[in-house]
Image (cartoon, rainbow, N blue to C red):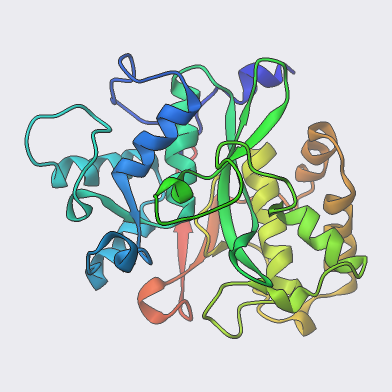
Length: 293
């Protein structure tokens, strides 16, 4: 399989639809800045000097497909200006890290750079804490991969590294986080969603490991609160089988190994999944049928 071509292809989630990409820059950094100009994280109100409307904070991040994100951006656009021009906060899409990552991934693919999104944990938002996070991974001409976080390009983030070439020990993909905790090199209670007390631990690291597998080699870029299979929300619910299977994902070292694992029916994302509902504080669940294109 030609991996260059594989990660150039859009998925139903990343497909930009009728967006004219012919005038977009080809440089990953310029594209990341463009994405930063179009999206505001729903928790960034104080950073950007804007009170994020509650309904937007709930509703915008439910946009599962890039075409939905672009539709919302068009509705809020004021005046005639190039796509990607910096917008006032109220004209932007109100999203999460997954939205920054998926839109950047979409534009990279559309302009000739192989890309995918990765799910894991960021160790650069809060000292001693690994926060649930998504970033973009893009492939250089020499075949190596780099991690990029378009969200932290805002000037208020003061980070000691290049957001377009992030150290692998500052952002851990799900499998790496799982392996660190299983080997006793990290405490699973320091991995989760900051500010939500019961969303942390080994069960949550497993959830991100499965989501990362689906996005990286399965082409299924889920919302952060989606799930499939048994509903697991604490470490006690993990079975020996769950742990052994996640150990196998974490031990894989190549895309070929990960792709083979993803063929396991227990790991393959089905057409119908569960999704926790934002407006209920992620307690209620709705069933969602995915658009497979």
